[in-house]
Image 1 (cartoon, rainbow, N blue to C red):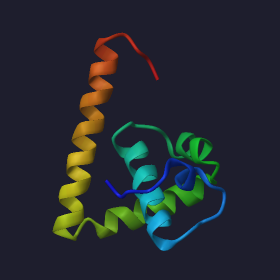
Image 2: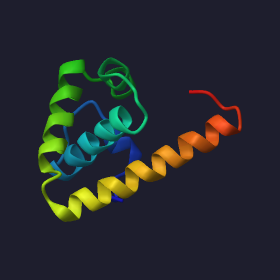
Image 3: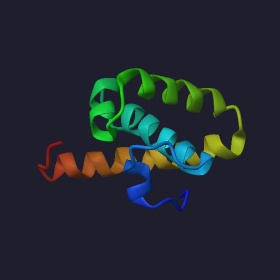
Image 4: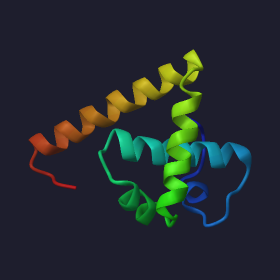
Length: 93
């Protein structure tokens, strides 16, 4: 959705503002849609729990933007649908 390379999302350095924002969104979605703890998300991204918490707060605050809110809503629904399908198929996280 944000046209960011996976390697850039996983990079240890912050990167461009576009990359940092996409990473914050992905951390937020991992926490909200996948029900991962802040600590679990931090481990996945090689970040501190407090960094993940900060990203989640930033994204939540930006949901006032109707365009971003709609994108996030679509992404959340897609992730939840995928998680449900995987659970139905017997695949666990």
